[in-house]
Structure formats: structure tokens, C-alpha cells
Amino acid sequence: MTILQIASLMIVLAGLFGAINYFFLKLPSSIGILVIALVASLILMGLDLALPGLDLASTIKGEVEGIGFSKTLLEGMLGLLLFAGALHVNLADLRERAWTVALMATIGVLLSTAIAGLGLYFVLGVPLLIALVFGALITPTDPVAVLGVLREAKLRKSLETKIAGESLFNDGVGYVVFLFMVGLAFPAVAYAEASIGGALILFVQEAFGGAILGGVLGWLVFQMMKRIDDYPLEVLLSLGLAFGGYQLAVMLGFSGPIMAVVAGLLIGDVGVKRGMSQKTREQLNAFWKLIDEILNAVLFLLIGVEVFAIAFNMEMLYAGALGIFLSLVARLAAVSVPIFMLSHWRTYPRDVIPVMTWGGIKGGISVALALSIPENEYKPLILSITYIVVLFSIIVQGLSIAPLAKRLNRAQETL
Image 1 (cartoon, rainbow, N blue to C red):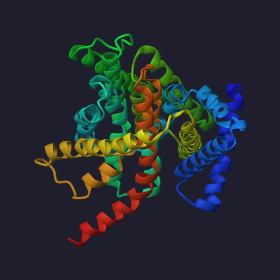
Image 2 (image 1 turned 60 degrees about the horizontal axis):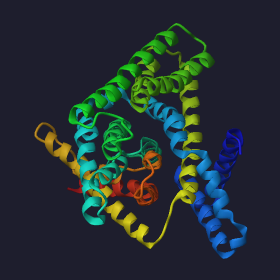
Image 3 (image 1 turned 45 degrees about the horizontal axis):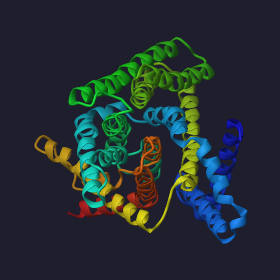
Image 4 (image 1 turned 90 degrees about the horizontal axis):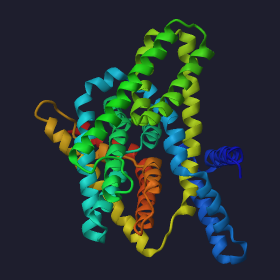
């Protein structure tokens, strides 16, 4: 199938599964599409086992692998999704919680990587460096999944800002840690010099380079928008910023995700307030909301059908259960340690740690990173564990975070 045919099929299926969810399951849109895609995929796999002559699984598996999920997400969709998500985060609210977000996206990421990786190393005997690669790829909370769930959960503003802001930044930091660990585990893939100095250079180049590029490009586009009163053109400029800026960051060796987040925050705050008419503001927000919804639907559909590329057996399922436990423990440490560090200077409500731990949803980024690992004997294990963790995170955590937050909030109000 050609790229255009694959894209057409994905959009048709996303629309069809979305309609089925709307009429029957009535789950949050993205989660409903994922569930239906997963069930449909499992039914097809079951038919293939019952009727071997059909050979459906191998045919569909070839098509799914041909999509190139990792490249499609990391080099195509991610920039638009992050820009759209950052566009609707209030910069003033984020600035008030800057230290919390910064510590969770740095110290929290490193703690989580170490805990998840060491757990896999000690329990399953995976070589330490490869286990730490798993720790790095399972650490980032997926901004796409998190922001999609937050829209439905309707958490209080301060808590939503912490979760959304931390999620927007920790995937960029986590990606840098992932690149460094892959370089250590697989020396032929030399993303950075295998030393602390090399890690720092990579971090500065990726994270700070991406942030500076996002700020510069965002400011230039804002200056153009300020002098233009033509909403189709201004929407087009924002699309060019998200698409072109991300690709430019990748070409320069900077972090595309961080570039998209910084540019989106700048346009969504300064640009909307000072550079647009009311009509442009409404059209821009409507356009990016639509882009966000469509790409979210396609992404969650892709996660559902990606099951065809995963090797499953009972050992993998047990390993997946271990992965869920490790990812939750690692997330708890990533949230609680920064909050305890800052608790001497500010007071946090009692529900912050449990809600942020359970609301740290994993998603397509973790699957994409797992697929990008160089081929080795442990890759099928890591890919299967990652996929199980992501499914649990999106479906179980995603559907239960709102009731959990409301229950804890009521309990806090009665104290």
C-alpha cells in the first residue's frame, strides 16, 4: 500500500471506530478508539488461529510494520500534537509551578529511569544497560495521552497545570536520556560520547537547543502575526511553525519535542494575547483543536493495531505485569521526591502525589522508542512489556483518573 492509501485507511478506520464508540461504548473518544481497534485486532488474530488458511495475521502484520509507527510518530505527528497541546496551556499558571515541573522533568526522569531499569535487571536478569534503556523509554508520560485524558477528567486547574506542564517537558528530557542509554548499550549507535560529559553535552544540545530554537522561531512568527490581520494566513503560519520548526530542530540535532512545546507555549500565550484579533484567535483555536482531535484519534488507532507487531505468550504477560508494577513505582518516586524536596518552601494538597502518580499516563512515545531500539535478543521482551504497560496505562489509568481525583478531592474537603 502507498503512504496515501495507508493514511486514508487510518482516517476511515478512526472515524468508523469513533462512531462505534460514540453510539455504543461511550468512552472518552481516544480511549474508545484504542479499545475498539485492539478488540478488532485480537478478533482477527483469533480468526487466524481458528482458520490457519486465512493467513490474516501475517498479512496485516506486514502492513502494520510497513506503517513505520516509530518514524510516523517521532518524525511526523509528534510536533503537531505537542504544539497543539502546548497552545492551550496557560503560561502564567505554568510559571507559578515552574520549580515543581522542572524537578519532575529532570530529577524525576532520572529516578524513574533508574528504578524501572534496575527492577528489570534484578527480577528478569536483563543486562543492566539494556534494562536502563527500558527504564528510559517507559519513563516519559505521553503528553498526547495525558492531555487527551485531562480534557475528560476536568481536574482542578492547579493540578491539571502540574500534570500537563510536566508531561510536555519530561518526554523531551526522557528522550535525551534514552538516546544516551542506547549509545551505552549499543556502542555502534553512537548518539553521544559514553560518559557523563557526553550526556551533558547531548542534554545541552538537545534540550537547550530545542528550547532556544522554539523561542526564536515562535517570536519570529509572533512578529509576523502582529503585523497581519488575515486569519487563514495566520493559521498557516502557525502550522508552518509546528511542522517546519520540528523538522528543522531534528536536522540541527536539537530536541524537536521541546522546540514544539516552547513555540506552542509562546504562540498560545503571547501570540494569542498580543498578536491576534478576536476572529483570528477563535479560528486558530478551532483549527488546532480539530488537528489535535484528528491526530489523537489516528494515533490511538495505531496503538491498537500495533498489537500485530508484538510477540505474546504467558512469559511475556508475566513480564508485562512486572513492567506495570515497576512503571508505577518509578512514577511514584518521580513525583514524590521532587514534591518532598520543595515541601519546605510551599504546601501541596494531599491529593497531589496520588493523582499525579496515577495520572502519569504512558502512550505512543514509549511504544515508538521501544520499536526504535537496535535489533537484539531482548528487544521482543522490551517491546512486549512496553506495549502492555501502555495499554494498562491508557485504558485502566485513563478511565479511572477522574473518579480517583474526585474521590480524593471530596475526602480532602471533609478533613
